[in-house]
Image (cartoon, rainbow, N blue to C red; front, side):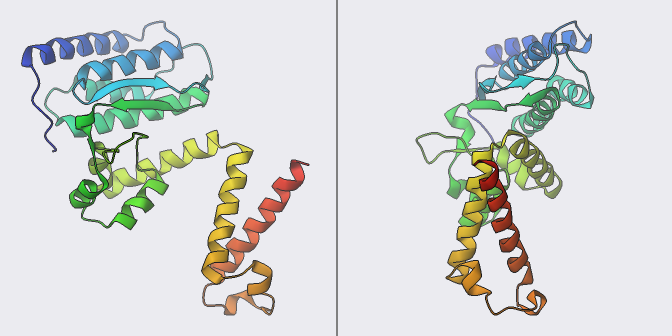
Length: 248
């Protein structure tokens, strides 16, 4: 799909063999903990995608639901992807990452997996726009919906596998759905209050005034050009009020 710099073939074969042995072991359903299961898959991915991926680690706030490892469709799909030697690197990584993130979500109460990439695996916003054929504002919207953007001091902050996900409507929907699951689960009350305040601010900037000023003479919201704005703005204010009361 998107070529990366060629790597030493011998080193590649050795790492591929390590990955395959890990997958074979995991296929046997070993008696390991959930944390060990995630660590094993993370290491297998580091071996298979060594020219692309540096490390995968659970965030510090991660909490596993139970001690024993859980096997599911996500582990089965991971095994298939990791064992496939023919699939293009970026596509293969994109699928493996999605299945690992799904697995991690299912077996944890909190936290996320944090990925560290080689610089060759990262592109700029302009390059991403060209690959996807979209504008800068569309990329920003995609980021708000779950597109991965890594916190690096460089313009090269978009992993290449974003191209695979966001070029395909089905995969884009999957990524957005999983992103929302993680966002809701890990969201603190402080995060929620900030999000609601930001939403209210956007409405105030759009209509150049407060809700009370803008809609003070409205008797039937359904007669407005955009009645959804009225109800969304009203509900945001009510939700913020309840959250403020609960913190008093």
